[in-house]
Amino acid sequence: MASKVNLNNGRSSIYWEKVKFEVDFKPSIGGDLVVLLHGALNREKRRVPFFQPFLPIDSSQISISDPTLECDDLLESSWFLGGENNDLILTLVSLIKQIKFEKGFERIIFVGGSAGGFASLLCSSLISNSLAIVGSPQIDLVEHGTHAVSKLAQMKGFTDLNDFRQYTYSKLTEIYSKPLENYVVCMVSNNDTKHLYKHIAPFMLTIKPESINRVIFEVGFWGIFGHSGSVPKEEYVKWINIALHSRCWDSKSLLEASTTMENISSNRSDTLENKFESNNDLQISLNISQYLLSKSGVNNE
Image 1: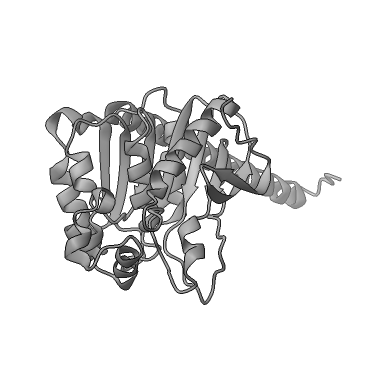
Image 2: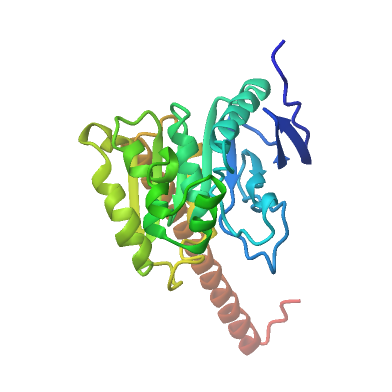
């Protein structure tokens, strides 16, 4: 008999394929499940397990803490890849598929920034027709070259970073160079130069022409310099809502849905503005009437 997850509302521990996952689940309306994967943690400020906060959206959400971080109190990020002889990402994908089956979800949206963006892209690539909405993700961990990458490489049994290049999941460009079966919305700040030029630009060039209709890249500036937080929460929420209201996730459908939602929002703003102006005109008229009545000696009470 196949194992069951038996996902409960709120925070709980799930044992799946000999791995303990700490999760936080918030059910909602609709047939979509949004999977939130966190980025690097400042271990002096945040404790493990850590859950990416839920977003203000009308969809079921599950926030998952990276179990690998429980192996080392100093490890800030492990990209949901696990330790030696443990491709945690495959176990995570298996868990999400089982939750999708048990809860009857129709579509899966992975959401994450930075290291969580890497994990979201990787998970989505392993689930057909899923969507990854990511901000400033790492694409090539060896190119990223942080202490956390070196620590992860050692945990997985590699002698150095060059040796780590042999690891299948250390570089997403090779995975995404094949015809895509998933969809991607990738955002990056044009001031986050390291990620823009060392990660996103090569990632763009990786996508084959036949897969262009499955990917959207948005390069902008949202008022925050550098990397951390450079893609604000509101941008993730915007694209998630677009996806939730779109029947298809190809780039044309998402962009059309985006335009429609922007027009609706603009029309509402215009309506409110016109109403405000009308109220102002009405108040001015009342003030004039009161003035004329007072000058004529008529009591209006």
